[in-house]
Image (cartoon, rainbow, N blue to C red):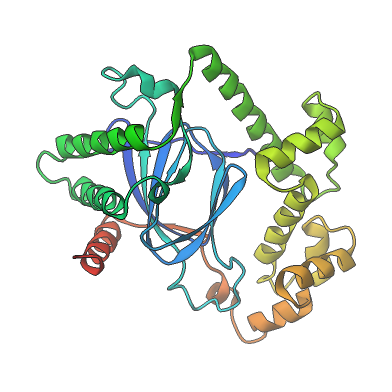
Length: 323
């Protein structure tokens, strides 16, 4: 059985703090125990946090609470202009363990922040100052400048202080923390089940039985957690699979339909027309399958930048946003 992408953060340089620069076309729903702050260095797209979608653009800075399901994608994800990658969002991710500085501030382990666009709670000057602080921290982290450990931890502490002062949050009890963990485990089970079964005739009733809930109760719970109905979520998964299979010219549209979980090819046709305004056949034709090799049109959904690429991207952002 496939598993929900539960991201296990490895701290190669500093315990409890990690920086990453990633270019993302699509990163499916995943969950981890760290707080995550992301800065959009370039491009635009959509971030989905819990059950809410946010349009994101260069200069945005978001906070995602520990244990919340989230995903990222280019907007529009399924663009046919595959050579145009300038608008693919480039992120700086700052991942902070909820054990960071716990010896001095134990409340961090049971803090629940409101996941949000930090610009909703900070002034432009404060948000820009926080971005500059984190971008500079990431640079010295990647370059391992002298005393970078102390500098980075000092700056992360300053960011956390600002979040505690200005972002809505709740410090819960250990019992509430345990209950929240159980809820997150349920979310993990649901997503894992759908990922493993969307290619078949998956039924809401089967998932409801797995969770010991009535179909009606489960349906309402699912919509509250994910912001869409169960069937719409499954159809999105099937459309994603269709797009992944489209570049393989050895597969017929009928095969793609069945391998994506659409028992009726006419249903896949209706979904394509709804999302793109044309049929799967027209979509494939627009991709230019007869002229282009698969390798030319297939793009990595996520690219983790190398050390030198990360430093270069951060310096480019600093230069373009210098006052």
